[in-house]
Image 1 (cartoon, rainbow over the protein chains, first blue to last red):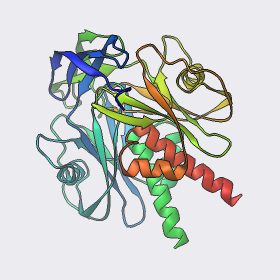
Image 2 (image 1 turned 90 degrees about the vertical axis):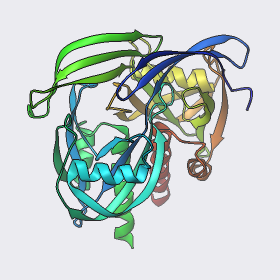
Image 3 (image 1 turned 180 degrees about the horizontal axis):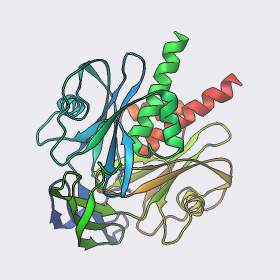
Length: 183
Length: 183
């Protein structure tokens, strides 16, 4: 695969932030020419697809400053330094929703924006939930919702649900509930 | 929904690049406290789910510098300034694969990383393809592949396919082919 690989010639740190870092790399292309790549470094994240006993999906409504818009999303959050994705998933589910999962099943992981960022998100599935106390981060404000599959599909249509992980989550739940029905 | 909204107090441009810009905003939280938000501005993108007559999915193999990794993805690319997503989808499909779609159907759009970026990707579906000549960007090196649904699912398992839009695309094709089978 050497005919595809870009080699780093030099790397410049542009910004080190609370959550993301930005660097610009000068690279040698496979044909010997040079180009630059703008790269956002991110710690990675998890999302939790949590289903109540009556097949409602647990969601949070949250303002997203990057979009200047309120979105409805599955509970999710960034990995702390050295934190295992599954521990992060348990933590974020409890912090954001108050629900505790007796077990979490790993579903899939994906890079969100491979063209410019290294963010990778891990998705977990949870059933058999017990309730506890919500304790969101001090700069995090969110509403808790439980929505049926039909409601979630409508929210995709009207773009209240409008992010990659949550749209994936809804299609996952759809497949799961169809499989349960046909069993 | 005022109990969720964050108001901009000030905005600082950190970086203006070829593809992304970075800004840091100081915001007033719903409880009156202040915090900062790191925001990556991106022009938006499209991805094309293109299916050949014998139900192969058209993919490109490409090195992603942000990940230091080769990925297999659906054809995709950034919106040019003022470009309509559907025009971008036609353009990127032709540039990256040489295929031309007689018609493109809009499927869904989603934000890839609402926590820190405004990138929105629009996905289109194409059948009835005609072949032409590939003309990738001068700093773009990629292999063209046609993969069956089963091969694509295996590529997800072994993480050769590992990004949000392509994983969504594979689940879309799965649903489509199942629907065709049962009709």
